[in-house]
Image 1: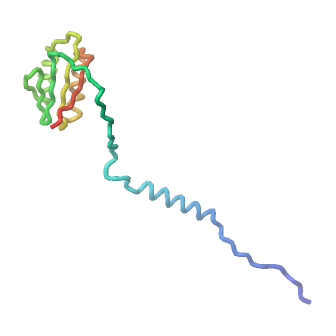
Image 2 (image 1 turned 30 degrees about the horizontal axis):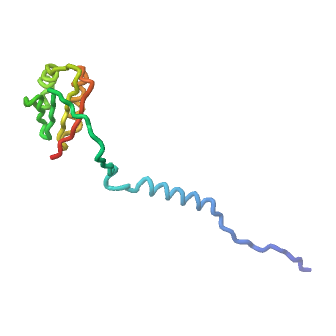
Image 3 (image 1 turned 45 degrees about the horizontal axis):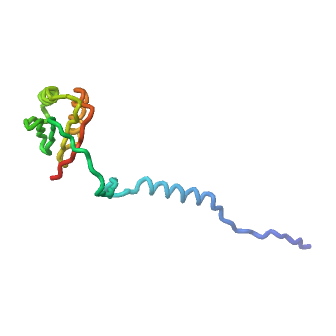
Amino acid sequence: MKFSTDNKSSFSIEITPLIDIVFLLVIFFVVTSKVGDSQFLSLDLPKTESFQYKTVQSVNEIIIIGDGSVFINNKLFNIDDLNDLEQAIFELENNKNSLILSAESTALHLWVITVMDILNKNGFNEVQIRTIEK
């Protein structure tokens, strides 16, 4: 006697591990890929003709040049000689007027921050910063 059996073999693929592997590969490629050559933002700032900045009439002016030269009221100093620089800034007139700090575009950011720190220590609270295009 022959019994009927309904044992049909069904073929199925489990996709749960496949999804896990795909996500791991995506994470691997995102982490190891290079985003770009530079990670800087290029901003196109709006230009206006109605803006008028207030020019400071001050006897105190500091100019930082790209080679490390600092001119304080047309006297030459070196950025590496901080003692002479601090003494010259200490001798400036601090009569509650603004001071003009001009920096050449090739001057290091560290130099500008160093001069601003010395100015802050000596009580110059209003500093107008300008960039000199080369």
